[in-house]
Length: 260
Image (cartoon, rainbow, N blue to C red):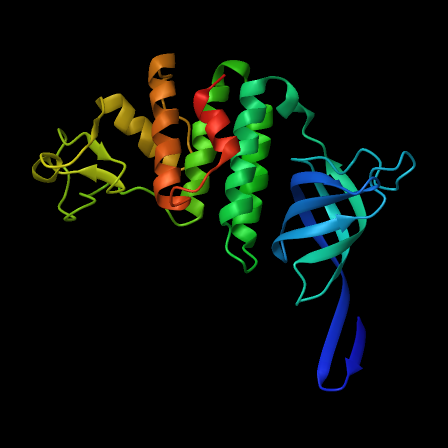
């Protein structure tokens, strides 16, 4: 640790090593990149990778979105942008590039974590994000759409915005078997009385069971028809925009919602 003291100000610059997942990169000048990283020990941070765009850069092609590695960086508590010293690649996740649907879902999850993770370190969320990206990368082609819903809803849950599934989201009363009305505005299922005066989406029993599985990080017991998967995707995106993003623009989420 390098300590510098000037007058009454005290500066601390530390060389820190931590596990990281690359959420986003973009060019900075003709030779460098800025990367947004989810880290185990520092939370979500921004780093400058100096010279990363040069042909003979020490970072090479390793510093790519959705890849895992161990980073060394010069960290200063008062800065928003830190300097990347080393990135040791551990997993590239080339499986995410096998089809557009898989990559779109992974990008939407990365956007969710990047934009709405708490400022302080959250190791459990970091580990879940890595596991979710692995799950998407390894999923069979026919399971990708459902796997995407699993990782998106479980991410929402981990961030603390899970929908109300076991009781009425308005008055808390227990739900009956026939209470299948879901309100995006209220954030969950509604009892019959509350559903009468609110805009809701009415689900089939299988869809309610599937939603419960998704939120708890599981795949449904039975496959859902493509039409139902598309409806679940729209519902998930609407819920995130309302309760997590508070109606802010999320480009990767919008692209995933379309489902192309």
